[in-house]
Length: 410
Image 1 (cartoon, rainbow, N blue to C red):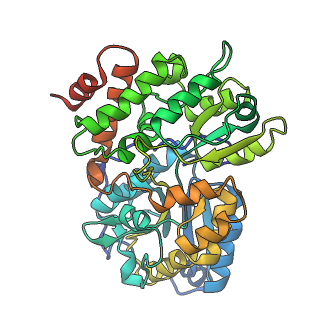
Image 2 (cartoon, rainbow, N blue to C red):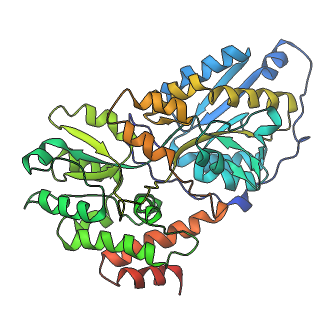
Image 3 (spheres, rainbow, N blue to C red):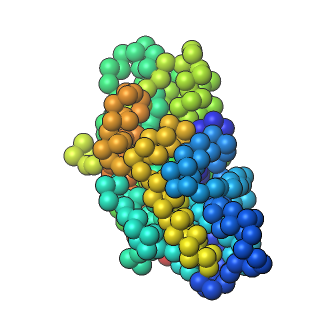
């Protein structure tokens, strides 16, 4: 997950090769040398590793102060985090507190590199169920996210008003009709990323999951109906054929430039949109096929974990550090810094009441689903099949049903 400040898309990160991670033993590392002041300071210093930036540091320092520990923060560029973790696992130099993109958590836990948070009295009580599910592997909780994100639709209020549209669409039929009405020679009514990466899968999931589709078998009629919707939008001329190569950032650029009236995207884009004084925008929940269906969007966001470093005392402190990071106060700070939604439903509700544009995200997070909730570490295999099917269908190589069968391998 990327920072809102950089306006980067929320594409799931690289898949972790769990087998490449070496389990660490609790006796791997021990203190060495004398018991001097330097050693004492080292034992009271926690190392923290993430792919955030300095904007997040005050939250770390506040927790460090409350626990009476020193900290060393190591910010890794997003694409470099998992390779760094692999290297550190091999050399047994993992940090004391490790941030992970939530789809990577179960794979790292499966390698034996993480300690259960419950060992340190940390639970997910009060948090969104999907947050706890994302951080749980084989019945044990290994990671928790203070704040999370998901997808909604951003729309141009002025274009809606000019077209005589008084309310956002709630069903797929209404979405198609609205997109048609907003489409002109130089503007698409609707845009999303259908790129051939996990980012494309992430964007398709609200349509697939809300309609009852499942990653366990992508050949069901429910998933075919969701894919048919995208084909219909493209055939209507309401969605560009270029969506198969657009990233989420490309999509929001189309929106800012007035080339798209509605776009699927996440809350990390809000700061950038707030800077566009000539764009009058709002948000609404991704429509469902039928009004009676509940919208189900994917859960995004980063979790904090305690690696098995071999130093039991520091691991205990790290557990308390993670507990501080997921406290209500830290959730609010994280949400403000990351432009995310607090993981606690009560805190999220109060946070959402501060802004009409944020509240649709709060509702979407409430029903959000963890990508690894069903398949666990095997999620990347299904994600690959899904974006391949979307690409096959939108490039006209097969019908949606046949594209899904091909991607499934049938």
